[in-house]
Image (cartoon, rainbow, N blue to C red; front, side):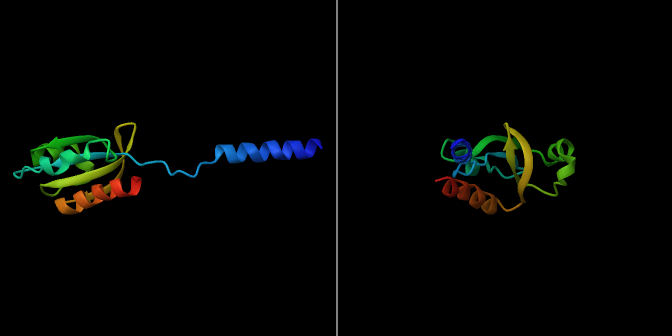
Amino acid sequence: MKKRLILFLLLALIIGCSSNEKAEAKYYLLIIEGEENISEKFSEFISNDYSVVKSEYLTDLATAKEKYPKYEIEKAPAVFIFESGGGEMKQLKLKTYDIDEAVKFLEKTKKDSQ
């Protein structure tokens, strides 16, 4: 009887601790505009409807290269999307010079979270 009770309690504990919900990813945007003003294309993504928690806009390519040398930024405009850890950049998910590609990635984050 004790064994059954212990087995039942362990099973209840395992079921109670497991979760069917996938943890929602949060994203940090790094946007290097250069000569082209692209900020309006990304402003809508910083809201409760999307998973972007923070963004940084740099207008100067030289400043971006100096501040983030390890990302080997070749030209502007450029968009870097990182999975966020506590609001800070964590893991690079997308590096692109194609603004539409970045927008599509972010639009997908809304669809995936619904």
